[in-house]
Image 1 (cartoon, rainbow, N blue to C red):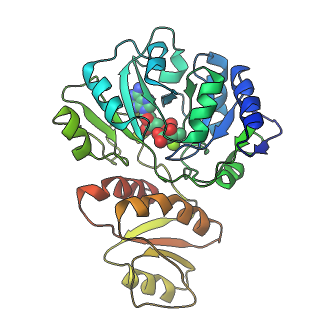
Image 2 (tube, rainbow, N blue to C red):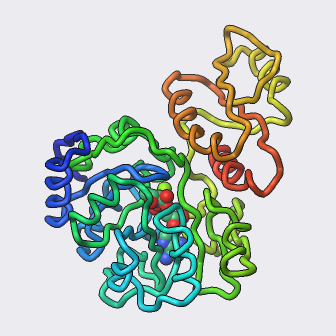
Length: 329
Ligand code: TXA
Ligand code: MG
């Protein structure tokens, strides 16, 4: 059990220096990225990395993504940097793409959950990049939430989940991307998407040719990526995905006397007793708001969250993936 005083800092030069110092000293720092907030530790320091698992209540079988400030920094992290990795980094870094590659022998085993590969990415956020450069070390950082809970897209979400577990939380405002990076395994042939994200399969294929989509949300074992446990990213309030805009299901639940929250598109049903959030109709705008909307609804002590089914097209696959995980009991 970690028990520290958590300080929430604005991203001034002086504060980022203090946070970089804390990271080098083996402490935990939560910081904003373009996807979600990360819970960072020195990736080269085994005991610092172990604190991440304790703070999150994370299963030790789930490997952690390592963040770098520059492509030249991946040499301390990976044992091999194939041409496809360079092509993808040239096109998408800094950005929401995690590449899974053979791990460097010097990287502590806890980072990779004892496995032979490591996930690495360069985040596209000025605060994250400045912090990484100041720290001068690769930073292991999962999303800054307790394991299985909703990912944080604002500093207040991190405070709610990890206060007392982390020395510093850098408040860089809301994360623009809103959902986690795409995870691509470059050690398999063809490369496999282990987790869909803001960079789509089509975008990847334009750079490296065919990729497989291995992600799924069932409980079958073995899982291609340990983080693909089906229940993940979930609010405390039970969530269900309803057909269409969800209005039939909302009416039904309200007739049963339940307090309902509802994520939907434009529709005619207005009822003062339902907390309705009208979501954007493009996948990137929807993604940028989804966790914040679920965090907000989760604060209201509702009995059910109903979500209108997103379109069944590939641009929506990352959003559908997160909603399906959030709805798994
Ligand atoms: O956008 C993101 O990726 C955020 C920000 C903070 O960078 N990080 C994040 O980390 O979402 P986390 O730990 O919540 O999710 C990492 C995912 C998990 O599904 C994990 O299993 C997978 O990446 N992963 C990490 N290393 C892996 C590896 N070596 N092999 C297969 N999967 C890996
Ligand atoms: Mg996570």
